Picture (tube, rainbow, N blue to C red):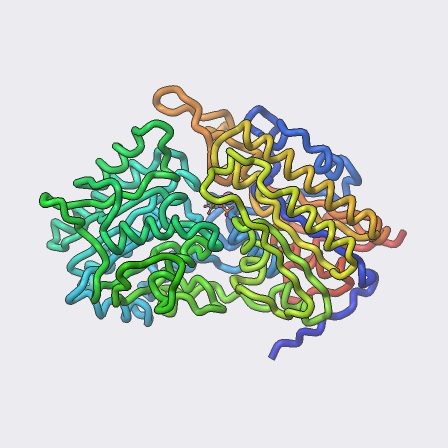
Length: 555
Ligand code: 3PG
Ligand code: CO
């Protein structure tokens, strides 16, 4: 039984309105021409950085500090918001899958047993993001799974690939397909009928999130399940090379394709009796497909056929919805999040972002749970994102609308915590369009100003931080930190996140005089923020939370 009652903080008062801002994809890096945050006018964020030095600092947002396997793993929004909300560091999906594969436990658990029932008579399909980005999936894990399935009786394997170019360099899809193809050839040499069946770019096919645009999932369904797509190829390498050669084509947005045999028939539609595994460990961009594959009742698009399959996710993607019901590896059990504690202690919370990041400040923040802890105390507002565009076309996104909602919530006096995610630095940074990313960063900064002004008016406290880096470094660099050129001598634009730390700033008229950042913490990270925020609400954080970043000295 959990004791939800939080102790009163010995020195800090309750009842201050806290504006909690997460700038998505906003790290701290050298000020040069590839640092779009530096290039953009950002007076609000600059004023925080240049304010009291003991109320601004950097914290870690990548690697083991957020539960990723190694220090080479860049941060991402899932693990970042999990850490921010949960106040503790959990071994995350990437790591849990590594462990399960290493120990072989993945093949002993219920999920594998369930799908392997189909190995004798059916085909096993693997669907997911093909890259080594480590954000949603990892190719080396897929390679191990393919081998493991074949060794355990899979006779016919079909892989449905989604090309990346967002967590990895654009153009890298070609070499990932080569790696996959040689793995499949190896299996064929051992008598397994294994090949790629379909594909498409992750942002255009399958991997939408938070129900922003179901047509994305439908395009994938048509190719993967029905075996229908506008483009048909004999093999995946040819497909990716040809589609990439079209003007303006990139890995993220490749159109859907199917692989066909000599008679022109799709080689791998999903049919009754087959098994399906979605091999992404990260939830947000798999939930919609999981619903389409699993839910009897489904009205988001016409599935045409709803095959009777044995479906398992790499992980369970939504603990609240129990979706999917079968999975290969148990997800991190993130419990007793700060949101749940605060709800039990009467703190009234408002959370808001636009669709593409809405689940970040709700679902991920709350330990991968959709829904409220206490409907009477919480209000979550989603502002619809533009859909069907790449965000460099609208770099301001809905930053202003999010800030206005936050401002109104703060001024209303109805909430103790007003939490937002400002998506611009990240969503536009992922497009690799530097000019647009500069505009994006300026827009986020304007939104910050509006929220800070509202906090000022009500005598509240602000906490401004970020979930991981992105917009502060837009070029691939060599070991010495200089821009790295490719074989043709060209700069390689970095669409992905970074390994950089992120800023955190606290302040506002409600901040008690003696509050400052402690100096004695050894490289704190995002997980230290939850206890900090609990303190600012007037509570002591639970004993197993990562320590608070602040101390109160007598003034
Ligand atoms: C995405 O899903 O858009 C990227 O892979 C990661 O971005 P996020 O972690 O910032 O959402
Ligand atoms: Co991102």
